[in-house]
Image 1 (cartoon, rainbow, N blue to C red):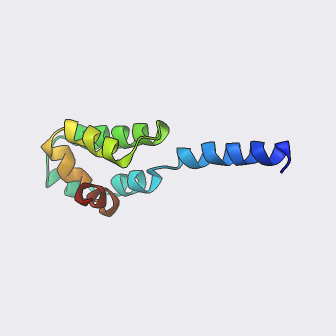
Image 2: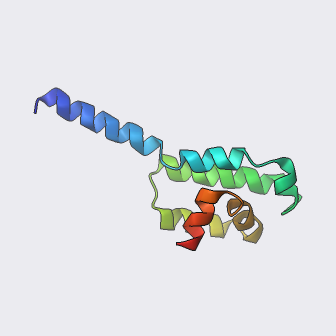
Length: 93
């Protein structure tokens, strides 16, 4: 294995870490205003949730830490998170 192989593998690892939770973020962004309004009139809850998931992606947080961070935002944010299949799965595991 050459030194370039090691560098490429390291770069791939960093790149893939930045992709963590991207599907969850896309699902959250795909929620309709009606979906969110059915849970809470506060659209800032939805924005805060997206921010927390993006931060978890950037910091490569564990699923358990992401769930804990979401729970800290409150019950309505947890309900919004559970509207997406991938985040719902995290709360069930």
